[in-house]
Amino acid sequence: MRFGAADWLWTLWLVPLLAVFLIWVGRRRRRLAARFAETSAWERLTGGEAPRGRWGRGVLLTGALVLLILGIAGPQWGARAVMLKRRGLDIVVALDVSRSMLAGDVKPNRLERAKREIAAILDRLAGDRVGLVVFAGSAFVQCPLTLDASAARLLLDAVDIGSGGRPGTVLDAAITTATEMFSKEEHQFKILILVTDGEGHEGDPLAAAQEAAKQGIRIYTVGVGTPGGEPIPVADEQGQMTGFKKDENGQVILSKLDEVTLQKIALAAEGRYFRAAPGQMELDELFKELSTLEKKEMEGRLFTEFEQRFQYFLVPAFALLVLETAFPFMRRRSGRNTTLTGP
Image 1 (cartoon, helix red, strand yellow):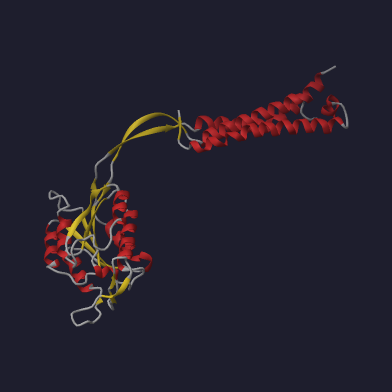
Image 2: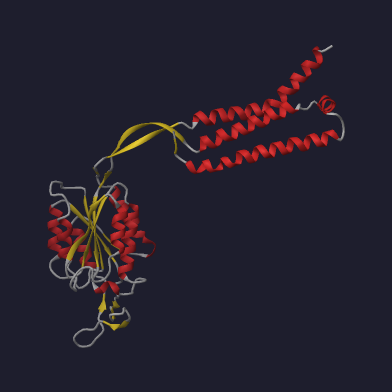
């Protein structure tokens, strides 16, 4: 036998405590009664219980408590093998780790805000496989497709500026790398979520998005930043900020959220564009959209399911409580009958 909520077994220490309390109450009651009359006379005068009756009630109450605790602890015996199957989507999240993601127009900065967005996505997944791509001037797989969202979360935490190789922003490489992670045999159930400011991109992301759409991939873009822009901080080797990134003429560069490009990418792959907002309200809309999509059956897992047997303890426990409640009544009736039939 095993217990599903074994922590409740620690409360069994209440049983000896209850027994000691009942013994104390019984002795105190006898001492108080002795001040007025002998025990037998007191019982006849008050119609109360004899000592054996009180002991009987104590045993019933203690037994009920033991059975209640054992029942609440979730006793289980008997098991069967159950195949648990999941239905979900294949979701790849591509995260921009270029230097422009250090801009502070969203707090604490674009990258940290983007990581929080992705962490919230991972927390909401139910039955979906998830993968992670990071990109800057190049793109690579940070986490292959997996059902283990907690493993993807650990790999996400390790991501920082510079994780994507050389400087720059190659949206097309990110889309192509993510596309290669999906099964070529399926033409649906495939989602790419692109989290970026879309700024300073190289290559042809629209062509990459169109090619992804031909393979049944929907692309949802999440823009992090503001259209007004923000300077890109520059730090030294110790991580101390030394100023802001400047152009060839010595002018401070403003990094702006490129919503137009992100909207075009989403439109080319039958997805939608969302801007990261306080409270992550855009994620509600994103998951509402994903919930309408058809899902595939994922690989099954074999689990052992134990039979719950709590009723074998709780039913007798309640029966003992009912019997304990009726015990004084039965004793008084027994006493009356004895008086009527005696000499």
